[in-house]
Image (cartoon, rainbow over all chains, first blue to last red; front, top):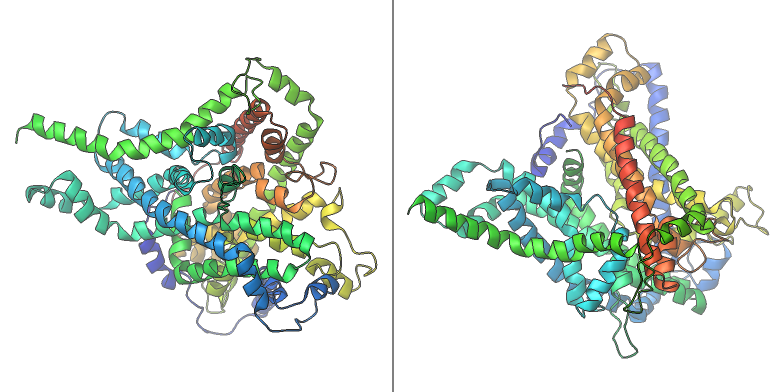
Length: 308
Length: 314
């Protein structure tokens, strides 16, 4: 890309000017009217195609099982929240909790270790710097699949199958490429003058990192933090291989994504689909909230990371 | 403080900051990747600690494996259609959102409500594939309770007594999955292309407009060439996604780790998982992993080469 690498904050700030609403200036030619109707039509159709299935699914939580099997377009008959309660009891609550526990450790750890590596690689020239950087970043190229079989046995050998700490470490490791890549470009853009001033004041390298550079990198940390939350929250393949009870006495520690698929099988047999739909709705809501609150950072951050 | 001492302190600091991230990354990412190559030359079952070196036997078995060959073919089909459809749709929408509106006073700008469209379109991107699997499992239900059948029955395209079994039709199942991927991806690439379009200076568009270029011309002659880099990157990302497909296939289609009906939706990743976790053929599964890796790399290089054009500076 020929554009200058932008900090996510900057491009977000640019947006209002960039795609602001058109002002009602002048009349529109007849060709314009036809085309406007045309383009609006297509845009609106796609928007409906996105929103409709999601609303339809959420409405399903208020239907009865026979109603779900009967006609797709029927309006829900009862507006009780009991399917949500049953979904929670069926395990969604537990899956939710397990996912929160893992993310509470894996996200901060990813951010800390990723920033430390990125910082050193971005600002300290030393032998092998480039090699280590490419080494880190290259991991983003390959699908997780290729490593899956040996990874399973590696975690098994460390006796960490079906443990939180095992999954946390694996999540941190697999989030490293993107985090290092993103924070590396961020640390490069920070001014050197502040760093020099801190050196003159006698601050150690470690102290400069934690007290000067890390606070300055906050916008970048927020962007990359959101991606790690989204990515790790939505991860399915890693937990489905690493988080299976290893024996009868081993407790079940399914992540939310795994749990939903589990619920899908279970509800297929028990014929209680409203519970499944309620479960999916419960899983969707936090994502919707996170997305709507941070949609600028998410969109700007993802694009600036991808376009480089 | 002497220079030497300073230098030493630096080395300690650099090592201290790199050691933990590197150690984790090496243990859980790089080393397993490397091991995959090694195991692919063995007949390891995964259960027993012993195994023999069998050379290229796994690879020659792969060549003869009908299921794997079918899966490879499906991946290649997806590889062609997923990026093409997603990119075309995303480009179309991005152009509409950013430059579709055009007032009589001149100037190129987005249609009204473009910010809202961007927010709505992007939303599927933050949903997990597991949610998509359940959602589209319900949409594609094989009775009129499914959104698609219900809708088509309502407008009379489908006989309510004999609804379409979308995911059980050998000829339909792969395309049904493809639609899910496109539905999921368009919003992200729309936002990506929008960002690229906005970094194009406004006066280029204004010049095109003064020269009397219509919307189609503006798009083909101005926008597309300037976006070529982003299109290229997107093709590679979407190609990698099309090589994977595990979550959707394994959860939405019938069979152990999906692939049904009768292997018509099989992709390499599902065959790999079945051989690893169900048949206990770890060495064989690793060989599949290596084939996937090689194909992914070939794909990236070929895409970047085939779509190479003269870079336009602005």
